[in-house]
Amino acid sequence: MDIDIVSVFPEYFDVLNLSLLGKAQQKGLVTVRTHNLRDWTHDVHHSVDDTPVGGGAGMVMKPEVWAECLDDLLGLDPVTVDALDFQTAVASRFGNDAVANDGASADESSPQLDAEGEYALSDYDAGDAEPLGPVLIFPNPSAPMFTQKDATELAGRQRLVFGCGRYEGYDARIPRYYRAQGIDVREYSIGDYVLNGGEVAVSVMLEAITRLLPGFMGNAESIVEESYTGDNALLEHYQYTKPATWRGLSVPKVLLGGDHGKVDRFRRDEALAKTSRLRPDLIEKLDCHALDKKDRKT
Ligand code: SAM
Image (cartoon, rainbow, N blue to C red):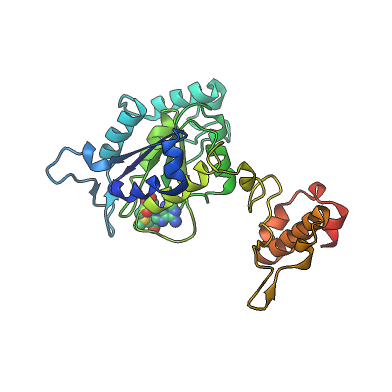
């Protein structure tokens, strides 16, 4: 997997050379290239931000600098996107039927043009994008939440390009522009809180994605039975190691008996009970056909 990360603090990613991700790079499973966004500036101050149009506090990351950088990384020529170009891009991606004559898209999964000829932020269905093309990912606290499902899907892609926001964030036209170029652009939040920048969020996503790559983990089994994993995802059962009794606390007796059937049943019951208590939202999403009679008693 090829990974590019653009940031104004590329040194942040030195930690990626440590631990399992470091080993995966040495083995050639993953190539990580970090880039300093300021290398694409032309002024003496290497500015990447400017004041918000319309007023307000803070600074916003400039589209020109980001676009010069991303065009280089993605091998794209700069183009001017107007409503007409945008419709052509939509038509080439989704077919002519997706572009309605009145300037609005006919298909709900296609980008919508609003009254001013602008287009909505994130209406591309990522599933329709070129499966072998690069995925451009911007962390953003107001985007949909990044999940294990996203990590699993992205682990199947060949090239990921991450753009780390800073300040008040990046100009909203940047993801729109690359979507209009037919690039699979994703914006993800890693949680309902605001960080100073996208670097930590990218590290989180990167770790969740790369550990799913075949050959990344020493024991491939360890990523099969994990929390949030699979179609009927539960929280994982509790884990214990030796000694069997520690400071007066004993591990559940069934785990010491050597009966694998009983151990599996016990762990499944524990996972169901733990999930119902801590994450009832995951229980609601379960496909009831995947539950057996014994599960229903839990
Ligand atoms: N003004 C923005 C807002 O209120 O939504 C917050 C900008 S934040 C200070 C700067 C950058 O940090 C964002 O552009 C994004 O790249 C990153 N970031 C902050 N919190 C994040 C989160 N919860 N998930 C993903 N990225 C986040």
